Amino acid sequence: LQSEERLRNLLANWLDPADYELVRWAMYHFRGLMAEQGRQGRLFLAGDACHTMPPYMGQGLNQGYKDVANLTWKLSLVLDGLASPELLDTYWEERQPIAAAVVQNSILVGETVQRLRAMREKKRADSATAGDAAAGSTKTKSRKE
Image (cartoon, rainbow, N blue to C red; front, side, top):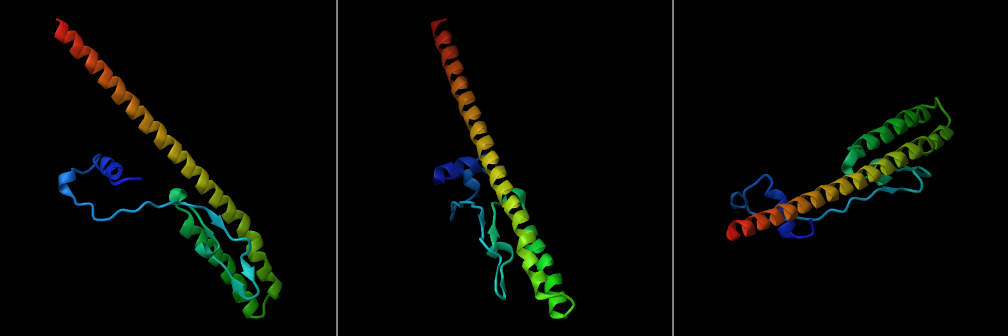
C-alpha cells in the first residue's frame, strides 16, 4: 500500500468510496528480530523485548507468555531457595531456539503470503487485460458487420 490510490483500490472490494473518508493511513514493515542474549546478570528479556515477529502466525504474544512462564517458575524456585541460581541460565538456552524458529517461520509465512498476493494480482491484471482485448476484438467485429 504505497499510495493512497492503491489503498482506495483495495478498499473498493468492500466499501464504496462515497461511504468513507480516508483520514490517515500508514505503511507498516513487518520484521523478525531476535536478541543475541536473553539475560545479562539480573536482567532478563522476555516477549517483544527479546524477539519480534511478523503477525502472520499470530505467535508474538504467545511466545511472550511462554518466555514468562518458563522464567517465573524458575525465579520462584531460586528465590525460595529450592534451586540454585544456575537454573536461571537454562531460560535462554530453552527459549531462544524455540522463539528463533517461530520468528523464522513467521517470516517465511509472510513471504509466502506476499508471493501469493502478487500472483493473485498478476492473474487479475492478466484477466483484465485479456478481457479488454477480447472486448476490443468483439467491438471491432461488430463495427465491420
